[in-house]
Image 1 (cartoon, rainbow, N blue to C red):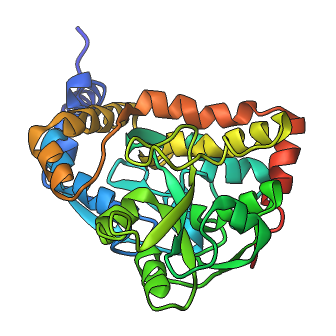
Image 2 (image 1 turned 180 degrees about the vertical axis):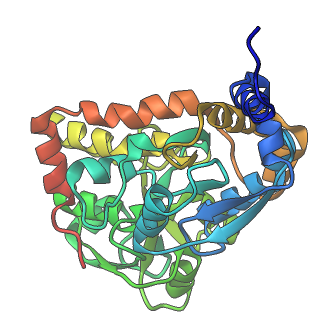
Length: 343
């Protein structure tokens, strides 16, 4: 007869417990009582901040275990600070979600300074809406049309070099010959819009959402002229404003501008860190899907004048990875369009 000592029995019991799948922590058990940081790569009051806080208010009830979700602004370097934080510092356990620049995949591919992350390694959770940016000029500016902007200089308030606020007008200067002079250093889009109202600059490039939420009277009352929108197709609320792709003068310009404008399809998108366990990524994605269909979330979005055009995390992941498929020749032309950003 084989006899096992008491110590041996205890060791066997522990080994059996550790090796039992039932001992593994469920997603609900993990998140119960936890707090998720919603890292916002922008200052307060801009459209990305408004969207992130909207999601923060509703997503927790759809995540198993119902964790608290707390918004935390981490502005800097056109959101690259927050993206670097998520890649290199944030916990890899699903307790941090973030929003950053929709151009991040292209910035990484182009070797833009300040990129300390691999965009495709993030676990993308979902997109609330596509992001249509535009350029507007104050009504007193002599620049009334896009053609005017190609003939005379106009000063635009800007934030950081990596932000679409700076990237899109710079690309327009380098590809279509506009003469936008970007005055960098404003804390965020809300601050940059106030600079226009104060007369420090003539205009600003930002999202349509940021203007319509921050100053809903400006466009209807003709205080501003919107001369171009940065998108692949016209926003339904701006049917008379041409897209930058429509303004291309030849096939090469059209190809370059279309490649850059693919970022508008990434839009206001949320992701968690690389290395998060697959079951938690799936839980966050399904929670996001449930959130954007939640009647309370939709009503809250309407109350704050936000539009919704969601896509799933799986679709978003493919979109981000797809940027890597740009041909080397087209990538060089896109890089040239970025090349003369004002520092």
